[in-house]
Image: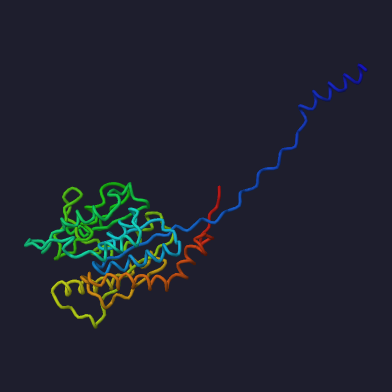
Amino acid sequence: MNTARNDTAWNRWTSAFRRRPRPPAPGRAEAFPAPARLGIALGGGFARGMAHIGALGVLEQHHIPVHCIAGVSAGAIVAAAYASGMTPQEIGRAGCAMRFTDVARWTIGRMGFAGSERMDRFLRKLLKCYTFEEMRMPLGVVATDVVSGDAVVFRDRGDVVLPIRASCSYPGLFQPVRCCGGRLLVDGAISVEVPTLLTRLLGATHVIALHLPMQGEAALPTNMFHVINRCFQIMHSRTEITWRQHSDLVIEPDVSGMEWDAFDSALQLIKAGEEATRRALPRIQELTGTVGGGAQVLAPGLKRIEA
């Protein structure tokens, strides 16, 4: 009995020094596909910018998730309205009711024929929030420093109304807006026709650019502002590579027959945006990996390695 008891004690004591098998090391977690983060970059176009509303409407109808949005000029208004929580339908109703005098007041000035103070009141009625921090998705707005020629980017924090006014201040028509410590700012499209790079900096993995092409030869200029607008469009057409290289898809609604001030053609402009986006829908779904009701699969070219 004593021998058996001693053997048992000895075995317990020596077992503490025996090398115990280690549990199997946890295997490396399988890599999961990263969901695509879609960014929308909206170019300028004044009244023709209402085509952007139709494009956003189609994305919503097909449950294409938008991660961030950026805009210049008229595109900045649509982008901010959408980022603030307005639906494309709500933006469309506001666009159809909008007139030039809602955002401008004719005046005699050394730097422009119209002031944009009325745009402040228009935007505060239109938007659901008024700062970048409150937006429901990352928002970017671009203006141009008319002295240095630099693009001035607004994002992340601060008031959104004044930057939009600056981004919409078309040279010669609107007086420049003083902002950012006295800088003189004009239309963002002068320095960045479509803000695709900014959209990537806001976190987009894939960027869709909404570009409004210049009017066709059938739409002849009829006044001084039409001529100025055409001149800027011609210059922009020579430098498109600067923004196209940062886009995965460019959608160009057929608004070539519309002039910059075609406010009375709002429904037609919105429809043009819808039609162009529907034609591009298969490519959009391929880029974003969306299927059916909006579920995401691995977008082409995307990989995520878990540490």
